[in-house]
Length: 302
Length: 302
Image (cartoon, rainbow over all chains, first blue to last red; front, side, top):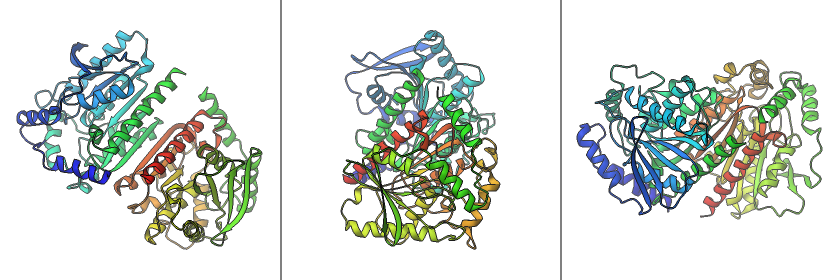
């Protein structure tokens, strides 16, 4: 059965209209259309807000008193997407964990290249820490998808360097964490990845990097020293150009004495967790996210 | 609290009498003494037997009707150890999972270099498959510690190449999977690893490799094509010379579309799971082993 599910998902991506290497304005519309075409469940509550001077979308479930906060970073190669385009997955995780999501509407390239997105991430994180005044920090985690996962990793590095308190955990879905595009899987998974090409990603990487060094650890955390980061859960599919980004990030975390779990799911594409409703592997991955966060919060509390 | 536990464990290794680079006969006695000094729980039943012409030790829990079989491979760099030296950990896992352990008493180097250990592993595995006649294969897994984890990986590769049925899963504790000793952690974790030195490991690697090529994928599975292997759980501590063996094995599995979970626990040494009774991280790791096996068996049954 799951073989059929995987094939159906593959076809959705292969036949889809998205060309992430295309004109940003046009592709933003396509991306938003694809990811918001299904209505969210009726009990999902979206509340636009501003935290630390940065627009955010708070995502909660009606009737649920949240037990903690997930600071969320959407995907889209730093050029596409918004909190709304990842609200389906974010609200699914909010429901499973009983937590509130604060999804950051960070500025996008090419209009706003690095470090705009990271500056926004740090501003929101600082404001959340300040508002908490030390309370409930045990139930704070950062979560990112794709470029948002790279951004979440960069946020943790920047926060550590600035002497800020760490959250209890980080969850990185299919991180885009090497904007030099040097991972072997950029070649070995060409054609296997139903969503992207290396050429398209290279165009978007240039948009974000701008005049900076693409190997800067805050742009490409696979080159960072990760000492002091909280426990990380990294999930990735094997049908991904970005497979090696995930593995090298786990490698760097391990080398730096960081608790890291790397979960590789075979035969599934980028951000397969967003398709948990139609894909057994997606559901299983989110079960593990829930378990991981529960364990991290319990350890932090003890 | 766990910081104290980790320091106590580190001191046990640093101050211990084992020198795995020393004379094999003498170190076998030391190794056995260290690992069998604590009595096993009274309800652990050890039953020596022979399967496929190879001596094994069956390990079960009194009163437990086993729900499946773990084919177990002890550690000791292919030179030291026996099913008895890993019976404490094996019986702990048997208890947690409700499964029976068949621990293989494979031949040791230098008296019996490669491929003797692998031949023994394959002979036992073939005999278990034959005895099952297709029954209960869904509840069969292979487990290995250290060199035994490298051997378990080699067994899976050899079994695949010989067209044998795969077990439902593989669990690899701190795999020793690169006998060329080329992992970065052989240098970066020197001194951090309280148990071993690269020089000592090199002596034992030469014993096992004999006249063969240390980069042979059946000696060093980090160089193998892992296509077709069952889901793997790989656990490792960051205070290990062998850290990169685990990471590269996970990398190879991912590249080959194998389901793999890599769990890196910071600040703990080689085979910390054997100290679950005194180390929170060891207990947590074994909880995840139990969950992983339950999931793998459930998927196999569906």
